[in-house]
Length: 171
Image 1 (tube, rainbow, N blue to C red):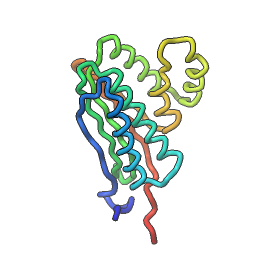
Image 2 (spheres, rainbow, N blue to C red):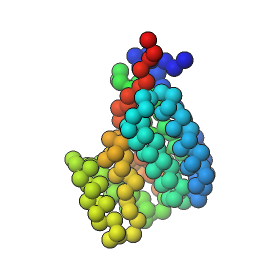
Image 3 (spheres, rainbow, N blue to C red):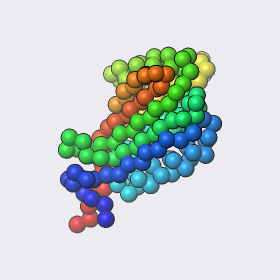
């Protein structure tokens, strides 16, 4: 039986290091595991579906941009400061060019006061540039997650965090 949201032990996590580069099948199977965690611990809402989408977007980025193929991924549902939260973290090596582009993109997304408006603007102009850039903005606009990133020793670290709605215990 799952613990209740008032229980400090509430939640579950999935964490792994994998050779993601070019391995789309890992994205699909990992997405399925995340969907199962959300189903077990979260109310079936648009938000829980958006969390699965957010995880998939980050997994796809690992498969697309990991230079050395070695990447880490963590998806966690846990109590943080007394509130149920999701935390998704990724880390991968990337080319210097991609790291610079990712930093610019993530800075823009993280600092946006209106992520939905930014998403709408990017959708409107997506045909005017190479690469849609829409995956990461969806984390803020649709999943309502905060984003942070760092670049250390040629590796991009991304963290997405936000509140979640745990399943109500059956009474």
